[in-house]
Length: 558
Image 1 (cartoon, rainbow, N blue to C red):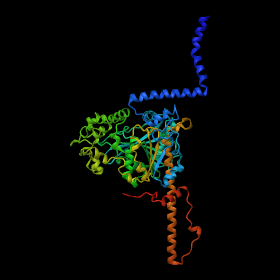
Image 2 (cartoon, rainbow, N blue to C red):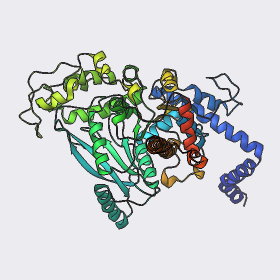
Image 3 (cartoon, rainbow, N blue to C red):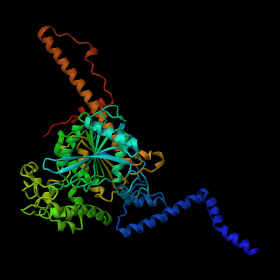
Image 4 (cartoon, rainbow, N blue to C red):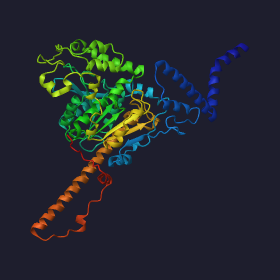
């Protein structure tokens, strides 16, 4: 009997311990100390993992973890607390004031804290895995460029929902071909959102989540893929350079031709900002874009390539680039230093070997169809080489390569509003101290939203239960960018109405004066006729801008 009781006690001992533990944890003080102990232990384990993988521990992350044990101190600012509010850095213009008043998502985002808000976990999550990977469907258009190359634009047509999604796929396909109005968040002429992936190409979960959220808000979504990326065929021996906007310019013109009455917006992801910022600078006021945004952008391209990344990110980026090059290695050996590029151990060595090496005088056409007329050293026809100017030939050296590819080389020519969303703990980009703050404080078209945490293209929110996960709302940068586009569109429409009404009133007054001088004595107009229409919010912003030295009207500088 005693042995039986002992066996029963041993059998029930784990359950009794769990019951006792659960009862103990119900005590608030015990529960609080247990949570703090678990988080402290998890933090120490994560520190060991980061040291093994060579991942840097950012000051903001360390300070967040210290909050588990104490009140915490902001290491960067030296204040007694860590601010969760983003810093909105820009020149004080009418549009900036309008954004602060009407763009609520830019005010106080509840960004996730450690461990979910760790910059490395957010970065790896945005680049490698996500919840929206297989939910979207695309239809592809391959565009033949002026030099014979091919780029791809993928139109997002919805989610995989059986036959309903199939019908929607062809309906939307027909709509963006014919310009028929589509249902959605916007009442008429739905806007088009052009997405630009990372420089090395590919659709990341972060970009797919943005696609899905934009679709739910009524945007037509189209993704730009450069030559030889994401299954796009490579038909010439020319690969897109870091800041070469020629292909994007033709893609924007094509998208605009499909929806000429819709507003066109563009968003770049990470290093894809090199092409977007270069395009905005070179096109200036002749661009079809209404506004643009860059999430975790690269502002200083040369310095970014010369600064070594953490090993795990560097290996991943190099592996992706080398896989793309190996596919066309045999065709490129006559015009590029393929062997040196494949044996490179840094992004700078790979880029320099691919675009700055001396090319061979003779070119072997690509097996897939390089024209026999191609006689230049880059495999381009003479007409294409003339159109590309200096980009038809390799750069002489590393410095000359960046003279024509630095993203902000023509920043003074940008003529549309650009919102840049950055994080101080971004592990892939340069430190926040290298941000060109003078550009944002002097140029009225550039706006910087700088947060203390968010990682690289992460910006996850703290409480997932308060957001709609089906629409990708748990990513703050997505909702902020889309709301920014809506507010900018409202501001520009109000500004245009105010300009047209005021110019029409002045023209009417001048014509009336001319008629009075030529035919009859000048008749005094009623006060109601001469009174200027009372400005609304957007019109008042325009008046504020006129009081300064800047008016939100595109100036054709080129």
